[in-house]
Amino acid sequence: MILQTEKKHYTPEEYLDFEIHSDERHEYIDGEVICVTGGTPNHNQIVGNFYAALNFALKQQPFRVFFSDQRLWIPRKRIYTYPDVMLVQGDLQFQEGRQDTIINPLMIVEVLSRSTRSYDKDEKFAAYRTISSFQEYLLIDQYTMHVEQYYKTDRKRWMFLECDDVNEILSLNSIPFQITIADIYDKVVFRDE
Image 1 (spheres, rainbow, N blue to C red):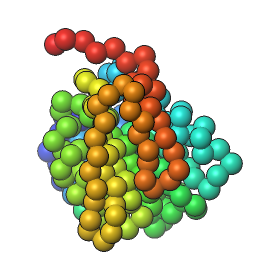
Image 2 (cartoon, rainbow, N blue to C red):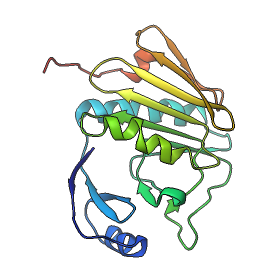
Image 3 (tube, rainbow, N blue to C red):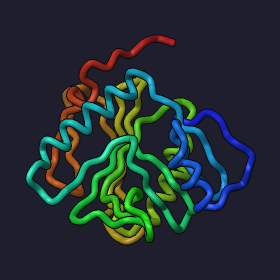
Image 4 (cartoon, rainbow, N blue to C red):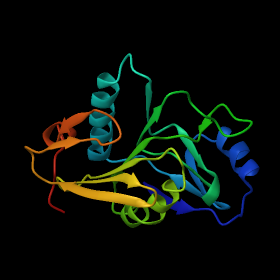
């Protein structure tokens, strides 16, 4: 969830120095530093549900699952970001000169909020697609039961699927993993606003 923007233009090096010494997390978008605020209970529940199921299913396999606090560098778009859930296959690849910023996600999950919905679906997805290892993207709505799945089928070709029924099973394309929509939304309470 992104709320406020600082007006100073930062270099990537200035951002990293600032970020390492900050008590809050910030994203970096081509010189702009944006504070990343905490999520809602629904947001955190969905991230936790998905992360826990995926991490447990992949134990003793050559995959690493990260959530929320792992920084990702997207060099072609000059973006540092913290995906809600990120999956890496094989060895971690780090940004040159760093041991805290990875560059090789296979799959990314973002839980949509009202303030980031458009950005996550458009500009952020376009940025993620510039990463050669990136093969699959999930967008999970926290206000209603709805999951959008995008997976790469060929160079510059992506397939789109959506799930919105509690009984549906979401099958990842990039790895052998399935999860029910009910499990993604376990303990999530939808409220009329």
